Length: 280
Image (cartoon, rainbow, N blue to C red; front, side):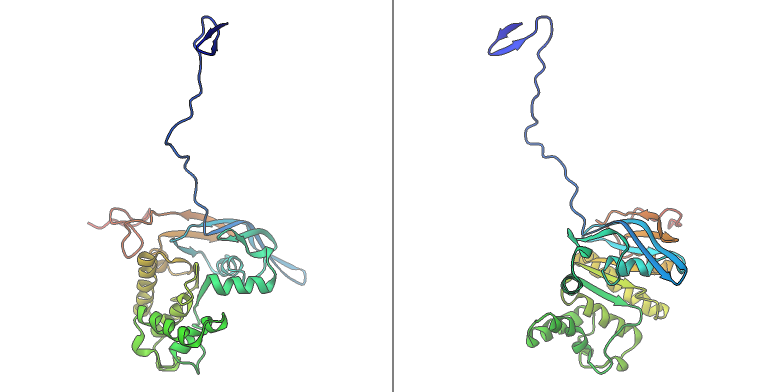
């Protein structure tokens, strides 16, 4: 053993020094907005037991637009209801921005849902005797926002979905597409972290469905609004930036797309989904 400038070196062997890298930060995977792990949902009716969700894992990052598709009865709507906390789960856990939904009480979960989530339903679920502005401001009033501020934000949101001139009209005075745009405005007015959409175009004709999807894609693309939607319509699924397929309560496939530089359908100009025909 030889001493050399304070270091001990074994004769005939080079000294091996561990040098810590300088200026190189370890890459860390950002926390997802939604994380579902081993989620289970079981329905029991008498002796009949239905496993609606089976050890289901799903991650959704902020800014994604995810379409969940699959055959009828595969568990799509059950998945949406469980991930949003509208329905209970029988196993696993669901985290929204790091918060465990099912570690909360029912009251806490309801408050968290009102503050952090928006919902778009196939049946619109608008209050028929309320005007468009009154329907949109309702979530704000229920969370304690002052009347004047709630109305201003409702009208601003209606303007963003192209319905400012219909603010004082009731649902019965609007087309189906306009009513669905009101529900989108209502879902977004509280600036939620995530919007859940269950068959958002299911009650609309082709033209109106395209207008609603144009709006959702624009909000996702320009404002980075996170959206998880359930649909059986391939025309809806192909416009999302990510397509998840379900079958028999499980995820069958999960196709991710890069979210930057996407076109109006959620695809980059230089690529299409596997199996899709290429233009030209």
